[in-house]
Amino acid sequence: MRTIRMEEMSWPEIRAAVDSGFVTAVVGVGSTEQHGPHLPTMTDARIGDETAERVARKLGHALHARTVEVGVSQHHLAFAGTISLQPETLFLILRDYVDSLARHGFKRIVFVPSHGGNFATVQRAIEESRKAHPGIEVTGYTDLLGITAFLDGASGAYGVPAEAAGAHAGENETSMMMALEPDLVAADRLAPGYVGPTGEAEVELIFEKGMPALTANGVLGDPRAASAEKGEEYLERLADFLVADVRATTKG
Image (cartoon, rainbow, N blue to C red; front, side, top):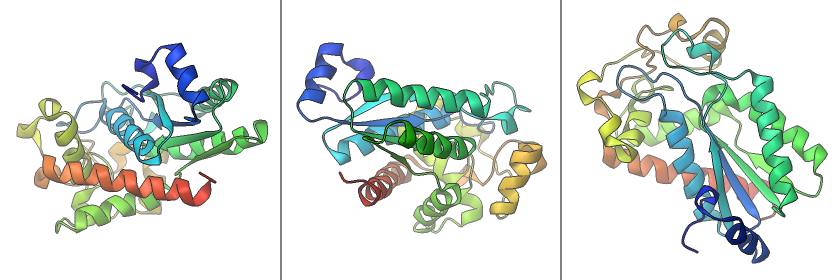
């Protein structure tokens, strides 16, 4: 096939793909929100879109459905350009995705959230979709601290401490965007933000009081050690990590 991106395919091409066994659909769930002074607001959506496509390719016999580009970002609204959905809005969008894809013959739907504020809603959508469509495997990686720890470990292999790797616009996200969209990374504005621990307590504080409770510039981490070379490796390792989880939790 010339592409696995459903947005680039015609409906007869998608129908033919499903009929020939491409019955897994992978959906990125990103956001449009501030990512410090150096990254574009598309960061989570772009990383989520890329990761979802890589996951689909690695799974095999899978198509990449159009990424959801706006998510639950109320905790970023203090920064200009952030667009946020209510959790219930995102939940209904994801349920509609599943209902639509199920109608066309997909048997496994994989959500790939790439923004921390989406994880709880994605988990709820997965649980409710399983009830509504018992014959379809609906899954996704929804452990926010788990994926943060994984990316911290990837950065750690290069000697980057977890505090610098960061949970938002730090070294690893900046590296991934340098690999994907180098012209959109403002290298002259790389600056550290909050560089302390980012565990459960800090995440709860951010969700309750907003990002300014921890960081004035919107950055969690220190992006100054970022590079495109590392970013490409992080993207590949992240996709492999998610594929392993999908294979462990579904039949495919």
